[in-house]
Amino acid sequence: MGDFFDFRSMITPMILKIVFAVLFFGVIALGGYVLFNPNPMNPVTGEAPQWVGILIILFGWVPIRIMFEIAILNFSIHDELVKISNKP
Image 1 (cartoon, rainbow, N blue to C red):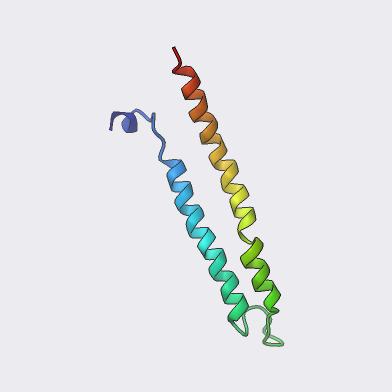
Image 2 (cartoon, helix red, strand yellow):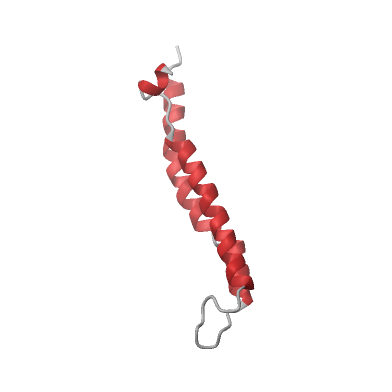
């Protein structure tokens, strides 16, 4: 508990992982919505191409993953620097 109040342990990486999981499942749900809903994108024709939903499911999470990897990389670098500084 002392590490928490001295800011030696960080809670932001855990929060980032939770937010990533929520966004990941949100992208999958969006892809499913576009894939199975007859009118999600084109109000004129009333049809959305199913391949758009498939592409969202397959590749929609990639930019989110890259963004969160970059954010978590900073914390990983910090952890490694702390390990190096604690060596005798």
